[in-house]
Length: 164
Image 1: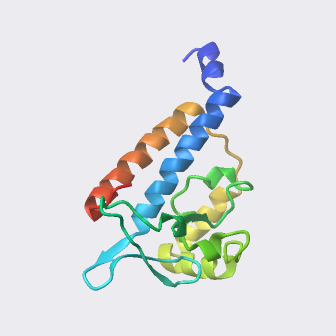
Image 2 (image 1 turned 30 degrees about the vertical axis):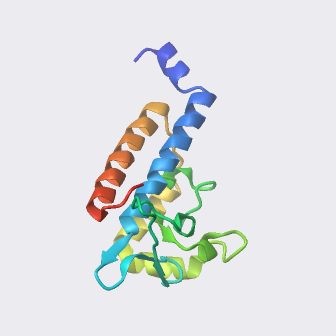
């Protein structure tokens, strides 16, 4: 790619739009990835931080009714640790109370414990190492990641038989 084309693609406006779209699909993917279904409980999720069980209600068209309660929560904050902003190990489903700035601000102590249980100490240490690196995404990379998250989210939603 020519330098002029690269600069045009990675101007501030294009980069901002690409980040916004990538964040949307990344969070949608994390939401459907962590939703579970069982005959006895229906659709539900378990908050990564507090460990509580939350049932998920669906509209008649199979879209999520109480989706506001399903929050893609970062262990390493996206504002401070941009290198792992879209890392699916860093993102997990959390309840509104635990993730909200008016609530428990991420409930980091419990999140830490439960994340290690979920992914293992080795994966957590690797996430921690990646979080402390500096990395800047470009528009092309963000678009590729967006397409990947979109595909994964749609496949998982089809598997669960819900709409996203």
